[in-house]
Length: 392
Image (cartoon, rainbow, N blue to C red; front, side, top):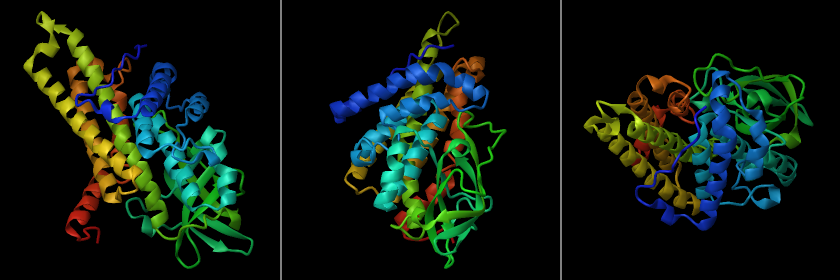
């Protein structure tokens, strides 16, 4: 088992932009990752299991919906701090960060933004502590990048509605007590519903055989004439605005998080190449290795500046969905390129579980695809700068 010796790269001294509180929170999450996640995550990834024992710790740290006000069980923090927390978690593992992102941005966020006061008081405090875990149902077997085509529907039956359909590729589904599900009503309008485990006809079969996000629990949501009380319908939003605003929140966290994976691989490669002796000297002294390391730290630094500025805009409620898309896509591309270079620098050792690089590389193949594929984010930016819709 490798000891977690991670040192945070900060080539442009961005720590000077952070508050003392943000640094303290970062150190707390980093210490938790080093103590509770790094020593076990390789084993859990190899066995395709999620480490359920970390949930309470994540809740105690405030990693679930930290931007939610204290009244509802959150920490009332800003979005930059949320991004910092997600960066530290993904430095440990993308699957762990996914679990926290889903809980905060895709479950707690819509209940907080669009839910009734009764819904907020019922669900948010228990989600904030991790007593209840949640999942987000948008993607369907036939509809991924085109959520408007969803086939999951519900019909009005008086005091309740009856929900039918299926969602897939759902993080946290196998163990979630709560699912925020997006479906079309009788008029074909998209609405959000809170579906609770135990409702008759609701099942969450687990997805097996993944080569990516192996330490994250993934499943389906199946609705077979599920009776959902009308008080579980989110009253504050109709249409695609609801799920897309959730995705913007999640993509913001991913923009920070993916850089965490990149930083971990850079730090691993830097340390390894300074210690690995070939031809009577450390391989970090050779030109090609220095080229790779210099390019890594350059791209990480550019990414750090991008997400820091995005965080400031988000805190001021000025960040646009297109700006968030740009950062999410950039961080994913930076991270996946760095993992591939780092793997080569470690040679054969790079494919083993003794180091984190191959696990990060496999995880990022999912991160680069979910919450909007790599190409879709290019088209979002393209439409924003040209005013022309390339989706149709």
